[in-house]
Length: 346
Image 1 (spheres, rainbow, N blue to C red):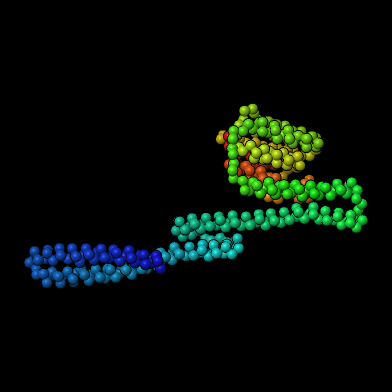
Image 2 (image 1 turned 60 degrees about the horizontal axis):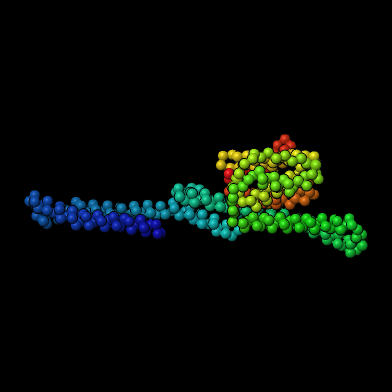
């Protein structure tokens, strides 16, 4: 209605301008010309009214009707897709996540519809991740708590003797809960973290320090570690974030490299970035799982990862910290070798 009224107002303004021009200035000029040619003023006026005024009235009426029709068509053309987007937005607000709208109509409205669809897709994906996160977190908590409860009931009823082995098993379950709580805390901190302090970082020194801290775990498994980083390679990154990313990737390598295997750390300059990679031998990651390994709580083989103590959070923290510093992460796995890499600004 507002669009139609606006169109009519424009038409009325145009008509008013023409009326003033025709019946004011043009009428006087017409009369003067007719008088100069020998006609009377009355005859000139009658001729003007007969030839110009009648036609002008008809033209004005046709113009008003045409503007109303065009305004109605324009209003429907604009309001229909906007109405669909509004209805879809209300459905999303009520909890629906699979809502999409057609991307037709004027260019600007089609762009709005595409943006709405992208927003709805992101909300649907976030809802899926949230649901999986809650379910996986509950599962990770439930397993050790169930084991602890079983052991405690068995000890209370005298079914299991209070031996060193029993207390060791209880300690392992408690350690799992502690590790899970620590990982969740790290994940929450990285979610809230916004104060990144990038500095010029010696990549080789940072990698050597991370390897030195993880070396005892590799030695217990008989895993060889190889480092290939050129001297003087520098990157701009937050030192704490960089160290935590390396620590998580090395912890992942310790967990999934078989005894006697090989872990390789490499870094190189690639244009305006520095690429750091951690590779390990052993079981590869199926191609179907590669796009999901950085998701929270995602595990390629649930039973295997649970036995080795992984909760599927470490790689999610890696992704968040790297992207927080303006970098990217990725993974490749083929022919018995898995390679995790991340890019940071040089």
